[in-house]
Every structure is written in structure tokens, then in C-alpha cells.
Image (cartoon, helix red, strand yellow):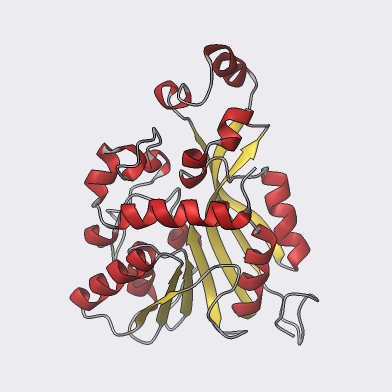
Length: 280
């Protein structure tokens, strides 16, 4: 079993490679990078192209949902995007919050931050900022943002409880998040759970939906609700790289489901927050 730091390094290395490629290259090459594995990370992606603010150069096809559509953004909001990549969700969010709003993207991969900054400069955006940092230790002050969005990133974070504690800390009282992520119903075969490539492809880092929602509630969020749920079907030619024929059939007959969900939750309007979150 790999340690949390080893898993982070796997993700950082793969997404550094992906940052150097276009969406078209990611769709046509394994893992979205020439890493010698068999995972196409764009399998889970949804189409952004019709959304206001969409910028094709910032779309690497890495998401599993459209969280900005469900985030109830409004003009003047300060928005934080966790795992902002090349800036896709940030630019869509900016089109909604306008010139009086602010959008902050955080990513742990230097190549992604650099790519996002170049994209923002080309667009002439002065109210979109990108910061290098980890979701478990966000480079923001407490009670800073109105809305948090994230797209297929928290499943890659080993310590999900700490990630949600940090999300809670940086949100203003009565602030909220809308996060698209990958969760499970049923148990993945051991071959998928242990595959480093599948981890970077969002699958083996996923946890049970019930556990995922339980963490959000335990951290102190209120009004937790699943806004959207979509079944993700992994093709046999991908699965056969990790499972024997017998294991593949057993998996297909097991009823195990891999889902993209978009989850909404609110930070309570109180003078203090849940103990241990660091925002009191």
C-alpha cells in the first residue's frame, strides 16, 4: 500500500505531463500523457464547450462534472477552485461573478499553475489568480471565499477529511461549495485499488459515496445534498489491464458502480466553527 506522500507524487508527476499537452492529445493518448499505462483520464469528462466563459486552451478534459453550473454563483462572489488545472472552471466562474468578483485557483502542480497563468494573461483577466498549494493546506486565510468549486480532484487527495476541513476553514459563514467527484457503490477489485495509474485516473482514489458524504457532514457542513449523479462505465479494454478474465467477469456481475456526483453543502452562519478545522 502506497503512502499518502507517494500517492501525491504519482498524481503530481502524471498531471505535470498532462499540463504539457492539449485536450486532443489527452483524449488520444494513454493517461493523457505518454506514461506507458492504459488509463484514459478523459473517459469521465463532460462537455464544457457550450458554457459561457469556456476557453478551449484551458480545457484539458480532466473533469468528471460541471460544478460551476450547480454552484449558485452570483456577481461579486469570491470563488475558489480546488485543483484548478489549466484554469477551465476558473474562467467559467469568472464569466458569472464578473469584474467585481474574484476567482482563485489552487493546484499543487507547478506546470498546471504556469499554464493557467499564461491562459489568464492571454485573456487579460486581472481578477483571476492562481496559487501553488495543496488542498489539505490551502494558501488562503480563514473565512475568505463565498463559494468553493472543484472538479474531479478531491478523489485524488489521500486525506479527504483534512481537505474538507480546509474547505470549511476558508469559506465565509453561510458560504457553500459545489464539488464534482468520483465515488463508489460496492467494492472495487484489488487489482483496480492498487493500480497507481488508475489512482491518477481518479478511480482507485475514490471512496464509497456514503463515506464521502459522511466526511462532509462530520466536518460541520449543513444542507448536504447530491445535485447530480452519473454512472461511469469503464471499457473492457481498459479494465483488462488490471483484472484477469475471471476477475473482470466477477466485477461486471458484482453490481459495483463508479459514479460521478456533484455535491452541494453550506458552512453554518455561526461565530465559530467545528473544533479542529482551524477557523475559530
